Image (cartoon, rainbow, N blue to C red; front, side, top):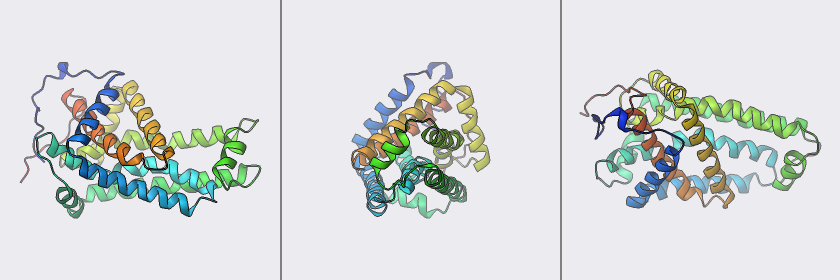
Length: 264
């Protein structure tokens, strides 16, 4: 990719505060409406995968709970094609499948490696969640109602709180590692480990803003899933485009420094 459109923007003119996530979401929604087809395809495929997973494991919620929450871990790499769409959109170019396929066909080893790491983390959480619920729950957790009654609304503190804390313990470093790294990898030739380091640097520079952004992502994905997965058709692309704008804002503010090179 090339230099960002406004690479010379004054860092002092970029405001990063508690309202920034709402601005990113508004920009993400604008981009989604401007070029809806790539987003519909990405979101539709993820919604379809979620529905298949729900139907396949509907009587095994002890496993499904971890699978759904693990979606938050691997979703960023699955939506990385939309960052390429964002790159073209900010230059006034509407694109669709060809540019997304070109990104995946490139076999970028950085994206492949990061995707494998996220898949490993997601698998680890699914197995951990399943083991925790199976071994600790007082009765077999087969349906969502069982999870609500015997885990979430259990009279004694324990299982649900530990489940949430373990999930947060795993999700937090994954979020910190990927929130800036994935757009950076798509946008620039920055080495993987430097991109991850810059992502952690961004979180450390604005922890409150990043915490608010993480909460927005979790809430919107949960709402998308709650709407019979159909909500993911809109939620996934809007979050991907919004994440691109977050990345751009942090770069404009001078809080991250990707390695840049002219596109061949």
